[in-house]
Image (cartoon, rainbow, N blue to C red):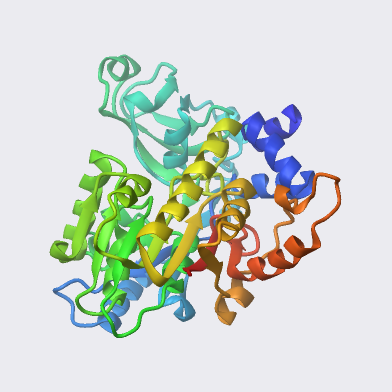
Length: 443
């Protein structure tokens, strides 16, 4: 297992666990797949107050993408989501005939010959740099002698090149200046739309999301009655804003947040998207604590994306997560589903989303929730099931096997029903982040 962890850059605990639960071949394939960036990022168009219609918004976004030269496709079956292609510069073939320029600056052997200074970055900083973000002094672990204006190679802790840039300060100034931009990243390994600096993003015309979130928000159905939504999401309020847009007039949202920084980010998103904040109640407690207060309101819809190991988010070149933390996550996720049954209306819809590869946080949480008796599975729409269903061959969850070692056929029959209520987004087949989405209903 140590060799597998070394190969995939994943923590030994997580590598061992996934190899046991998924089978070594499938686990290694998935872990290697999420090392790289996804094939697409997903743009969710918005209609802020200053805009007239969705068609006008989409035409502006498409015009901007064409101007910048990005390839894209519109996913009309997912409520007009736009998938923008991500290119891997390490795999690009130079077309120039100049031998001096033929060196691929993302291949370590070729860059060593040029003798550029090599700057080693912390984990999260190396992921951000691969997507084009600048580097602050606190992001650097190993710094060679450099001067302002020097071209440098940016590397992760495994000495893989993630980008290159220009030094803003000398090495001595960087050591004395915490928090300042030390290196301006000229190019990350992955060519990704720089949306935070884009005027259409700043003006609220679109948000960036992931495929599991896109599918999850599309699984919630609304009728003509006003809806009361309970949302737990790890993004910065984009899903809440989109669900409020899709819900009938008069609908309200209760949004559970992690901490002060998360609340500030959510309010910033609402301001950018022009969301009517009078329709959103931001909560500071966890869902289980909130449910113990037995609020008078009964919720009709739940979107639950509790913190998971996020082992399916891409790019994820290495992942440091211990088994005890994954099990702790699963307990919290199950607790959230159980709490929803206390404050949900009859037939309330629940969508459960993770960005995890581990069945403990996915299938097993859902199966245990069904066997509590308050929640029942809902078959996914045919177009979703046919487009995204991929079978990840996890071992049967433990209660299916009796103490004598035989298979409980009645429970196996239940699982045949359960499996129709969930899908896995596969990092290779779907070209996206890996994740898990399930739909259920309160009895």
